[in-house]
Image (cartoon, rainbow, N blue to C red; front, top):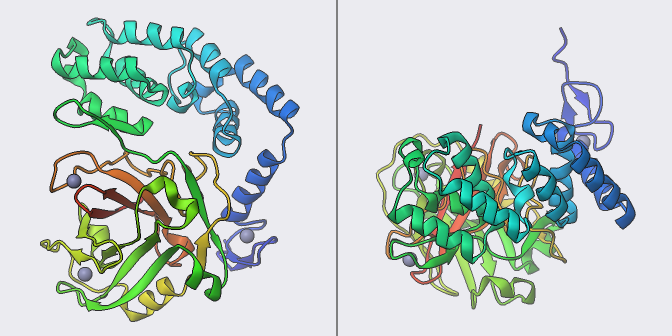
Length: 369
Ligand SMILES: [Zn+2]
Ligand SMILES: [Zn+2]
Ligand SMILES: [Zn+2]
């Protein structure tokens, strides 16, 4: 039984099996999809429609559909029609372009008291992906006049809505919870990082009062770069945290100033040992990721090996987690994700950053398997 180190045949990284590493495999898969012609994409959509039931079992059709949405941002209208006909509700994102008639039919099933809670839960997610005024109004109605199946759901419809990138506050006012554009973080040089409007892992001179670890700005974002106009941030903001503590917390909050330093909102620490140490900080700060030149589809980063990105949809390893702003109590907006192992070798999972621009608060979160 050899756990002996081998090398990825593509990038040379150390792995423990013959062949190529997970990240090279994901990259090859991405290129393959990106290189498809319009004609080939159409054929694949036909194929998915003809084999739509496989999606219920997370089979090949599911993988293909997901890749086409991630990398080609395909219009899913036809797939949604095929899926609804067979009542395939497993994969909500395929309903993102569902035609109005299907949305109406789904709403009708949802409003029925006799719908079973499992189906209703799936329908809430599919409708959240479809979005639109009718869906929003339906969710509000369900909050005020719950249907019988809602007794068995653990969370309110407003939480289901966040999977589609929107929600509403306690007054029923609509809130977008995702930004409408996405940029990937790509490998650059140390010099390029200095000029990049988005930087991952910047050291500060502070140390954490709980564990002694050096405080970092997990991400610094200069919203004045024309690529980042969609963020509506008129300067540089810094998501400050203790990178050693916050993975153990429910969320690490900070107050930011435009073009100023951020201040961590005090918390009771759950874990106080400094695992990361100064070596970890150096490794994190030493990454040379820079903001990509061109936008990518909104769900580009929303899967394993999705990498780090700004805007669009996150890859939630556990549940989608849109925090409520501690100041105004309204849903925050998902801003960015960092795939840990791209910046820290021994770290698993993802870090997520959310923002309330009204109150100038950011939160950093962590999820892993
Ligand atoms: Zn590799
Ligand atoms: Zn700490
Ligand atoms: Zn707020």
